[in-house]
Image (cartoon, rainbow, N blue to C red; front, side, top):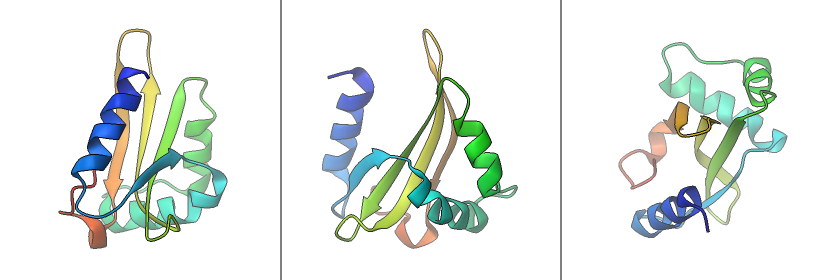
Length: 101
């Protein structure tokens, strides 16, 4: 188990609702864009998000709730050799202050 995996496992234990952290896939893209529009001052479009994720070291994670069907949050980050740069970490307004993020 890597450091990132162990930190994600720890985060899921502290959430006030049941959550599951999964890889961000195209099926999540509409929910990601909706969350961006709700919480970001300058939201990305779906095309911008896909372009970001095409970067060789870019990674996206989604947090799912409600029988694993609702995307409640997402994180986009870039892996560097010795560190990680978090590009976006957004939680849907309805799910804020519930231990997600």
